[in-house]
Length: 95
Image (cartoon, rainbow, N blue to C red; front, side, top):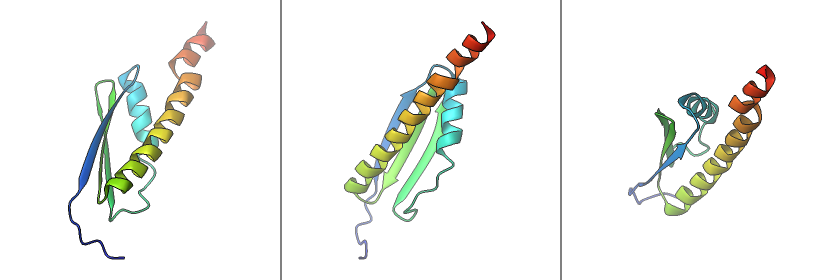
């Protein structure tokens, strides 16, 4: 199937973290995975203060929804991992 529609759809998501360090860790973890359809999905990640900013551009709205859903599931896993092993865990170990 050939894609003739060249209209790109962009979604920007800002995810606040407790610190810039945690946002940077999340960015480093999430940017390792390459897109399965690089010709149809472009994703950029940046850290702005304590926020992780993801800009996702896709060829179709459906692909945008699927990509954002998968991205947010991965963010959820990173957030829970940081909560378990991040700053609170560091403080518990030193106490």
